[in-house]
Amino acid sequence: MAVAVVTVSGRSFRVGCEDGQEARIQELGGLVDAKITQLRASFGEIGDQRLQVMAALEFADEASDSRAKMEALEKSLAELKTRSEERAARDAATEARLIAQIETMSQRLERLARELSRGAAEADAPL
Image 1: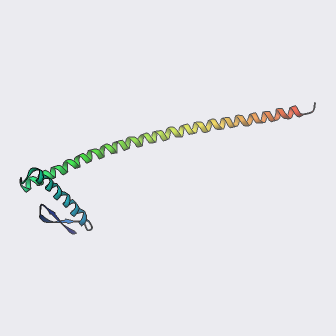
Image 2 (image 1 turned 180 degrees about the vertical axis):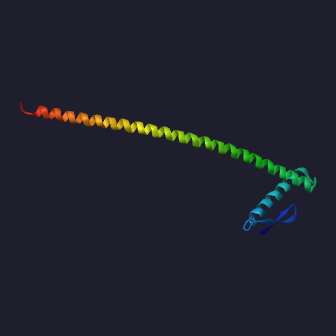
Image 3 (image 1 turned 90 degrees about the horizontal axis):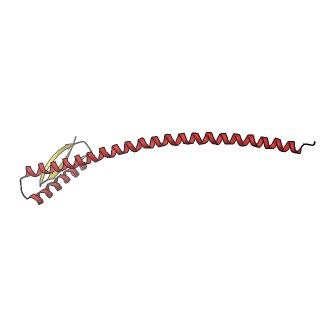
């Protein structure tokens, strides 16, 4: 297990993490430190514990909003996928109908060509 050192409000903390995650933990610690610095600038010195709770609540609020947006996007994606599948099925059915119509027209044209050939041959035949 690796250890990352993060600094929040001027105090260093050793945090256990998975190997290779040290930089990510330090980055997250930097976000926490920046949020507490922002809150301290807005509210003054109201106590480290209150600032930490306020920062945690703001992060929880952001996470909740992000989760709601992600769920809405997943729902929209599912609806789009369903519509796309329905459209593909309609397109396949339309294509099958068009192929059948083309085959029917081709057969009619071949029959008409044979009849015309026979008629021309009979017209050319000596009496």
